[in-house]
Amino acid sequence: MSIQLPILPYSLDALEPQISREALEVHYKKHHQNYVDTLNELIRGTSLEDKSLEEIMFLSFERKQKIHNNACQVWNHTFFWNCLIPSGHEPSKNLTEVIEENFGTVEDLKNEFATAAKALFGSGWVWLVKDKWGKLKVRSLGNAGNPLVDLGEIPLLTCDVWEHAYYLDYKNERAKFLENFWEIVNWEFVEDNLKKENRRMAPQIFQPKSRASVPNEYRM
Ligand SMILES: [Fe+2]
Image (cartoon, rainbow, N blue to C red; front, top):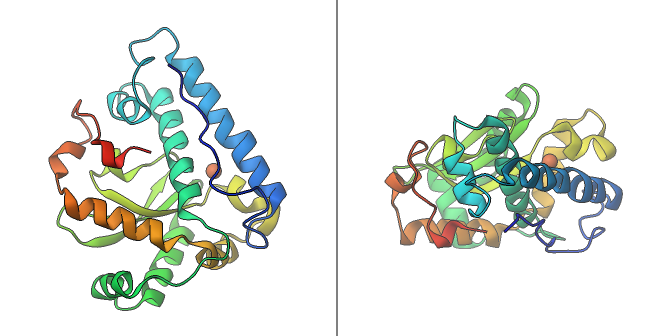
């Protein structure tokens, strides 16, 4: 069994003008595809070959760094595509209340996200997560960081802040990319992730060094 590039949930030009067709095409068809191909090459003939992507992420943690990084990059990009939607909208009343409880206002969340993105040196990902105590937090994780394996936290939303994610459209202006990102956020996906987590809070499953696999509802 090999890891497949997932189908993009919209057409390549669907996120314009926030993300151009050209930028999305390169990001998805070149970068994401390259992580998939590299991962398949690295696991071929090993005990990880027949494992799911999530199992590979956990089983390679701190032991097989190259495999781990590529597996997380495949997962993170799939999650990122699902965080986006053409012509985004505002979060629902219920989700807005949850955000307000944790950050003050939706605007405060966006500001914290922007600050985290700005502070992240080099490449990485900014995440909205639900921590082990049920609190929503903004996290920035460098390179192929993933909250499931690195922190044992539930990812709700992410923004790819590797330069390849925005350079074609925004050049060096990461902050501008972040600003426009909110216009194409799929808040229903964020809320779905919140519901999943509420249904089954089992932080021990996500302990990074365990060999445990991820429950089905967190698989993509
Ligand atoms: Fe990326």
